Length: 269
Image (tube, rainbow, N blue to C red):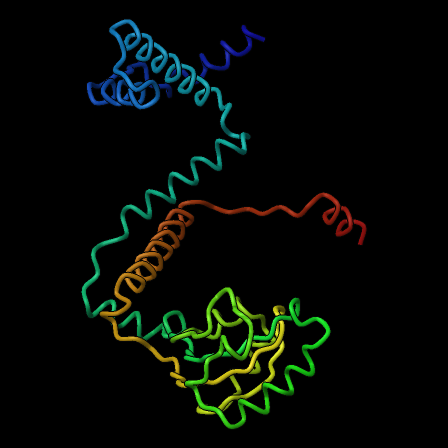
């Protein structure tokens, strides 16, 4: 096997480069890597061992490539592809100006549109504390709140709630995450300026007073500049990667053979 491998490598020797240069910057990188791992600089002998190990890697890598050992290795193929994609990304992200960011924001408003938000207070009836009386207590509190305004003392009427009694400018998604989807749908459809309920949640029952409702919209660029720049840069990277792949693909003649089973079927037909 060794003689066979040597013969195969010998045939490719004209293609394999014979000169290996270990540059000063490469040696510095090897020393830095050692220092990050061991929290101290390498000794002279340790640095020499690192250099010899690098040379060993390079020799085996070049000879392995010359022998074609990398051609059917999925891990190597995937890693090389990733490096090519990273190369495309590094070449494709100039600093955008305001006009470019504004144009991207106008073309992709759904990515940056703010949700509707609510400001509300609630009176909470705990399903745990009032396991046997929650329905009767709910009717009694509903009668009181029918004549009350937002200034009513929620803690005096109901039970303490871990997340508080008042929520200011919370989005529909946050309400759903904290109280559940059914609760969120109910209060999003409620009127402003009066107590309504009870509304059930996983915690118990709630009487809700909505004091303000703000419709979501597209914020100005200055308020979301960082997010728009991040999305713009990501779009440019994907576009550059696609263009690089398209240009490289044009260099190849692509032949896609039919699987053997389908080819056999075609012949039999």
